[in-house]
Amino acid sequence: MDEFSAHREHLVRVAYRMLGSLSDAEDAVQEAWLRWERTDRAEILDPRAWLTRVTGRICLDVLRSARVTREAYVGPWLPEPLVERLPTANSDPADLAVLDDSVRIALLHLLERLSPEQRVAFVLHDVFGVPFDGIAAALGTKVDNARQLASRARRLLHDSAPPRLAPLAEQRATVEAFFEACQGGDLGRLTALLAPDVEFHSDGGGQVRAALRPIYGADKVIRFLLGVLTSGNSYLEPEPAIVNGQFGLVLYRDGQLLGVVVPDVTTEGRISRFSFVVNPEKLRRLPPVDGADEVS
Image (tube, rainbow, N blue to C red):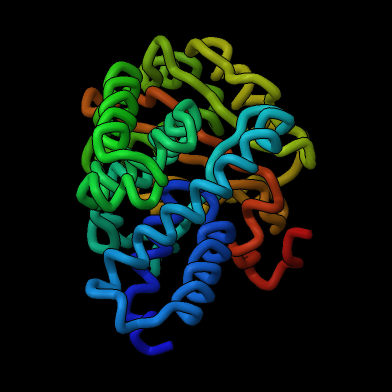
């Protein structure tokens, strides 16, 4: 498995961007390995290219079958967050991560609007630079059709593209100021830190309480967040982290994992979107704080 292992991390990155789930991405890569083991290696001139195409084909099949499941999903669907803990509370996020727009939760969420074929074509070509003849082979179609699928995906994403993000240090300052204002109930400060058309998307998957529809507008988002963050007498502890390449917070309540929130801070210094993942199935990889029980 040594030759395959040299490409495994790349393949997981490819599959995650297509599927939005690290566990599903790892399953797809495992299937790619099985096909690799059954193939005559002498016929493979470029192992990395071959494995990328095979992984793309496997992800296409997963996406096609997942459409029915996601249509029945309770509430908004958000990707499984990729969380990188900061070593200390005073750590600079910029020392740990370089912003990668291709894994932004807002972008992966937007990719859900594409057909499975468009998503595979876009990710393979625009993110990983796979030539269209390789994409056509993965999709089982002609080169011209593969090129057209990627072009249509690109136009849709361009028309709905989320705003550019501020540098990580500015993201952190804005997010921390916002949560301080929440704790103090400073409505004026909260409003100033939000874009007027701010969006709030939460994913509970029907397993825990969450907003069943996106919330739009600063006033509604503030009311909802104040209700979530200040409810009852419980103690809310936010832990800074890098989430999908941008600054976010892992939230604990009374030592129990609550969820992961990712605010999109624009270059104007305002939050344009919140992505709040509370579905326990998407938080299983996160360790509990201070030895608390794991989320079941």
